[in-house]
Picture 1 (tube, helix red, strand yellow):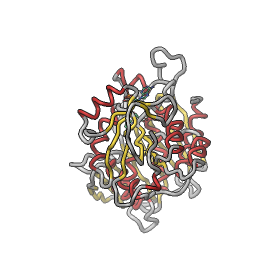
Picture 2 (picture 1 turned 180 degrees about the vertical axis):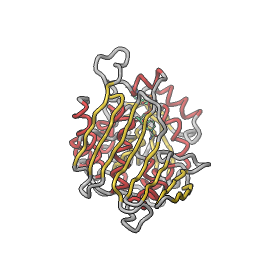
Picture 3 (picture 1 turned 30 degrees about the vertical axis):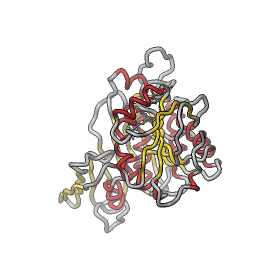
Picture 4 (picture 1 turned 135 degrees about the horizontal axis):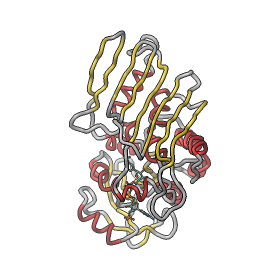
Length: 344
Ligand SMILES: NC(=O)c1ccc[n+]([C@@H]2O[C@H](COP(=O)([O-])OP(=O)(O)OC[C@H]3O[C@@H](n4cnc5c(N)ncnc54)[C@H](OP(=O)(O)O)[C@@H]3O)[C@@H](O)[C@H]2O)c1
């Protein structure tokens, strides 16, 4: 079964998606994908055809989709027929690069969950595929709060906080559930704090600063090995970075410690703070506090689910960042993982 090439898709037709994997994020996000403008979920793929069928029967937005089985080769499916233009890849981290390349080679556009890659060479292999169109699933960067924070960061001397000096980010979530430990703390599945959460800190800083790192330092502690494995992953990581303009990054990520999630932009005249910039709840929005010259200004940036913006932008072929965004992100990950002594 071969999908129709993306370039052959008539512009007015919805983009037909296959959801690859039926785990936690696939269950949460498939209804959002299905309600995104210009998107239709036509297939769901699992290692088990029974699980794919059950997913189609129970997950809103997937009813009516064809159940497929993951084939032997990366990017291949068996067990059913379906024509699709794009894949939303929700597999464990380790499988992302090979599956993205495999799907691209079959003419399928790919939106892959983060991290898409953790070595620049992996992104080069994706980009080398003829007509390749792929993106990394940093849904948070598509929510209006990210655009607002970037506008504040790039406002210059006369802007809300003055000239940007430092980006701070904190993304720490103690993974205690057995099924979370199984992948997040697993070396075999390329888990770890950087792959799960630190990648958000790097991409957020690059997005708001609008620059690429010239310096990156990562240090921290390893997590206890997941049962049945001997190699360990990074459990808690402190990141320090610098951009060409002199703007710095200070960030912390952890899969071992629970701390409030937040970002802070520090400028020459004040700072902006947001405690929910990753996936703001649709009913509450994201609160941003700007402090300048001792005065506090509060605003709430409202919006739809970050995932919906992400899918709709993907369908429209819009990129919100520069051409080699994914390669630069993978390079930053590579530098950090090397310093942490974690290799996948
Ligand atoms: N953007 C976000 O907010 C966000 C949030 C959470 C996770 N994520 C990302 O999404 C990805 C999946 O995370 P998750 O929490 O959904 O993980 P998960 O619950 O473990 O789901 C992964 C799914 O991959 C499929 N799979 C295929 N081959 C597999 C194999 N050999 N071993 C294990 N699973 C296999 C499984 O579906 P079948 O059993 O049907 O084959 C499994 O349910 C990760 O890369 C993670 O970083 C993103």
